[in-house]
Length: 404
Image 1 (tube, rainbow, N blue to C red):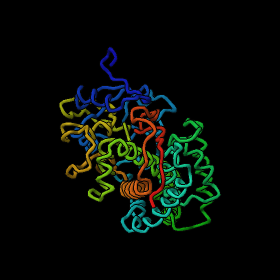
Image 2 (tube, rainbow, N blue to C red):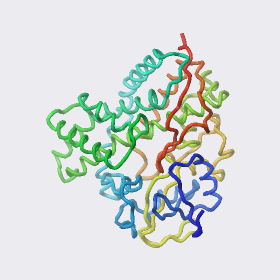
Image 3 (cartoon, rainbow, N blue to C red):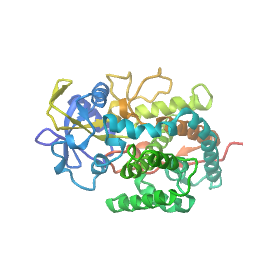
Image 4 (cartoon, rainbow, N blue to C red):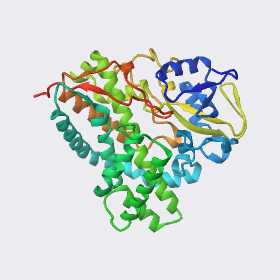
């Protein structure tokens, strides 16, 4: 904490949950500095719920009084300046979100399940072809390629562009050798724009086609800029957080053999491991921003109109005021709600897909490699160097022989 009593949020912290514990001890709304931005941090479950649903807090950037002081090129900059439904409110948000609801409907998910299982089986076969006693990075070789392939098919990325697109998205997911940067983000956008233009004349059973049809039928409902921004948002948001979810679940289950045995024996479903991971080790650490539209009081703290609030998802998941033994990973705990996918009108559209991918991936992986063991202790793994994501850059394991 600095002299002005503001916590400095370190994107490269090696102790995210320790940082969050200290934030919660400081109060439900805490003044912080994040990537040079002064904001309030909503640290506990009830306060975060209030922030996500309060009618006097908005995601629209023009409500931020000090937006002109935003440092360019940061993670916060990329999020708050996004022009898709992410930062829309009211009627504009409904107009942008509505065309996508069918894409993530239960009917479409049921249709996707066999394809997700097929892609997962292919990855398992590839892992099984590697030396059983040599380290393999499961973030790079399993947790990342599965959701990347699924979202590429769902959106409709042509095969000819997938290698280039995946090379760039590697950096966003923090796998491979490339580093995320503003220049890389520009290159990614240019490539996505090229893909969208190419797809205009090649309709298919995918989201790009659905959005084109809506744009052509009623251009007033989805402008050209909104069309491009929506597709870019879906590609990036549609897989990066799922990479973290699967990585985090693998990490904790390998360090909690009793919990893993409950899954392998069938006494607990793999869906329980997905939900407990989402609560205990949220794929998102902090997410910007909501802005006070006018002066408002939340949990005894007075926010002035125009002040920004940062959502602390990983902190809320371990709030001892909301959960018994909040720091304990326990897949047998009674079903509890969590805020890992947000709440209210901006609840994550892709939540059902992420849950499905996580369940299928974990069941297949731990069923295929019963002797799998970690190469390093959880605390020894390098964290992501980002304010937004919560995971590790690698997940090295010794697979052992494949189950017969």
